[in-house]
Length: 189
Length: 278
Image 1: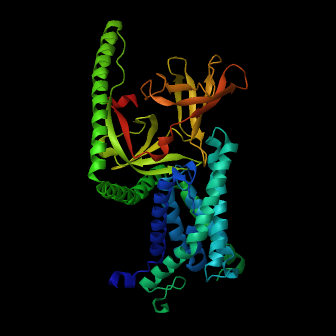
Image 2: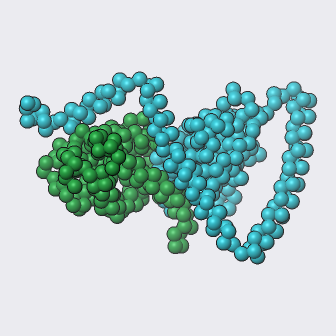
Image 3: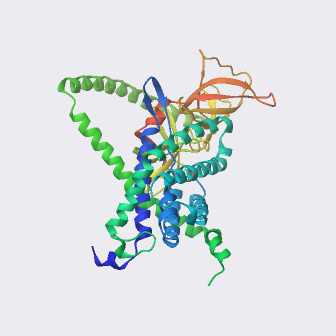
């Protein structure tokens, strides 16, 4: 391993880069889901929003200082590509993260089942917050909620499927750097 | 050592500190940070788009010679049609110029047509946007109209070094003055009716009371001369239903938009030759 990585503590960077990778893959998925045909349905359109997944690893397995760095950068990364007031996602992710940190000692931190549950509830909260913020611009908010509901189901199903993979990816990345996510000790792996 | 109660509340104290810091941060720094984070991600979006192009290229290479010959014949027919259209267009332009000179009218806004590939589409209930593969490097400016073969696509809302963001006509934030084709009275168009299993729709307000539509006879609406930077006469969609507004003086209704908006790969940006027009 290069000397610079042996001296530095890149835990926040590892998590941020993993989030960036998932964010990029999500952008590609949304590109193709903007219009597609499925079986007999000629026009289908879905939008996946899985911001809640970005909080899980930092909240359950990372030290709080590095977690705050990773969450803030991830939020800003999301804000840059979305037409929301800059900082919105950062603050919303921060709120979810702070809530999870508050109860972290009582949570099971290993395994992916609890991670999935946390991701699902976090994502639900984020989607509802964003919807309340943005729905006012719609000419018919009641009809917009129907679309939000469809997107929410698709997003939650996606989270259900990819959370174990994403948590494993971040765990493996930490292993690659030979660093323990909570203590930062090199000898852990 | 800090008291235990403070230690428990520390995450919220940290969040509060971040929030305060963010609120007092100057707008210039926020704008710079946003642009920086966008530009960091831009290469990933562009790479993805170029990989898709490569994929299309290789899948096209798999076509047989017979298929290519048939496509060539179809293209030759289209070229003949377009040649005729270009000739007609030249005659009409000359006629417009003659009338402008005769009536001392101000000239129509002039545009440079800048074709651009779509790098990424983002369609949700909250917003409908796309990122195109041209930006400041091709002189694209904020507010420039974006069109395609089927009419209006949207308006450029953000411009970066090599990319630009387009707010689509299907987006709830998109508003424009429109009129029924062949009728100069203006009405207000707004996007935002996006469904999971139905093509996108928009809404119209302030429709004159004598405009009537039915399912078999929808009314075609186009951009109005009052539509700001948009040249008049560009297709928007078809009004499929109308009902009296709350005050009874106008009508409100729904507009069916082009289904192809959800799968666009190529658009044209109308870059005004006089930037003051934006």
